[in-house]
Length: 396
Image 1 (cartoon, rainbow, N blue to C red):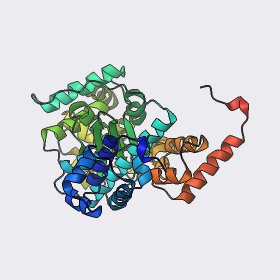
Image 2 (image 1 turned 135 degrees about the vertical axis):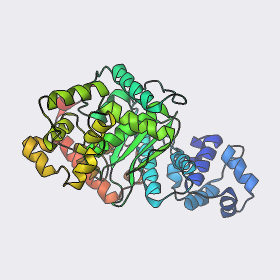
Image 3 (image 1 turned 45 degrees about the vertical axis):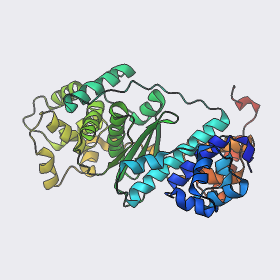
Image 4 (image 1 turned 180 degrees about the horizontal axis):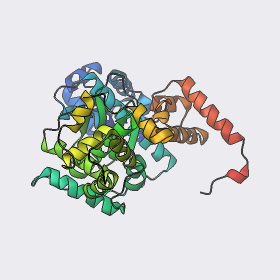
């Protein structure tokens, strides 16, 4: 177990305060657990009075965390859960599930990076101001500005997830939520952790692409405010309308999207399902998002998508007839989401275990998986490593 004296009284107090808030426990109730007054607990949380080990054990048990997690020097104690709770007056179970998952993923990744000495690359563009002006026009301009800043031009984005993770440095997680969850994505930002996004891996690839672009809009325009994106959400607030428009403009820039559309429909008298299938496929978006963007830009009449929906839609079978095998795009993130932990997190966990920086018990607790699942993961990676020799050693 980590030593109580390894951390300052102020840091332990801060961690206890965050653990209490995350568990939604009042100071009065927490003080009763350890048989003291509320002012004494306040002194502990401020770091004015060092907590005793017996008190720490009682509080940790009451907050649903381990003493080891509270005391590990590299442990990350974030306030993502309280931040989201302040955002929403009423919290649905599905929202709480998604927020907790994002919080746990961030804590695990950052702690493993810290303990392994991994420095995460960040290439954040400056935040934009959206307080005044036409938000839809602002979103179009800001989306193209970001593309130019990244040196992308205006063509289709082959892999928006890698762009956000590797080129910008956003912490992006794609994990499965409960089957009935309405949550499509979450966004949060803090000075210490940076920008973090969770996408619901139950959703099809094209929907996750649009959700990622929407959350990127929040990162650009409303960086300091956490956000929950839900399915079929009505974008009424200024901030949500901006993020929605930014997502469309970033994935399908007005000029290039219009030029592609006109080239594709040159000589045609009417829009057909084939046109939509080809245009959506070229831009890596859903057929619905494609038609709605055409309507939004005035390239087709309003109500086209509603007509398609009322007349059988545009089916996967029809897309296969047009595109053949290429109609099905690889979706490695969905496969990764089926694992108990992501591939990257698993490799970092193995490195921490191999270098004896963390025990199996600590890793299982950090990753929220059973010891038997962790053991299977470690054994598999260890076997793969044992099959190689010194030739495969990586330079440091």
